[in-house]
Length: 189
Image (cartoon, rainbow, N blue to C red; front, top):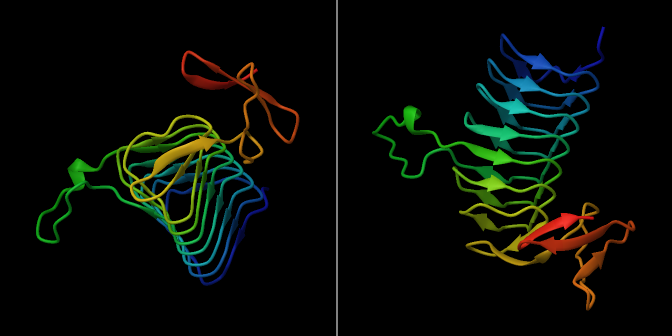
């Protein structure tokens, strides 16, 4: 039997799949038809779903709501109080549930505290979104994005550290990994 920790103050709806070694802390609500991978952690006051898929090793800090339409791959970090949207033009008096836009967070990306991810975008692998940024367009793999609206100011490696390129246009990360631009896309080499 798998080990899962769910704090007694949290609510788990029916038809939920939660991977082993996942921890769900105080005052969380996991809505129906949601799949959560192994080794995940959800801080205080998180809401997930319905119909959300979350990969393995995902860390969700306090006060994050992950709505229908959001898909999260493995090893993603969601900082405290970051925000997802799911409709471009919400109105309280118009039901737009059939207009939810898909938002994809690819493997290993990190979203800083209080950042906003506008629906319909893809955040690339290992990208790093700075605290308070507002992302309203797709983000390339390994991009470092800050500001309102978010703009790319550099590149980060898998370690999350900024990359500096030498005269051969090669960057070596603090962990020894090497990166190069290939057809205007940063790739690990």
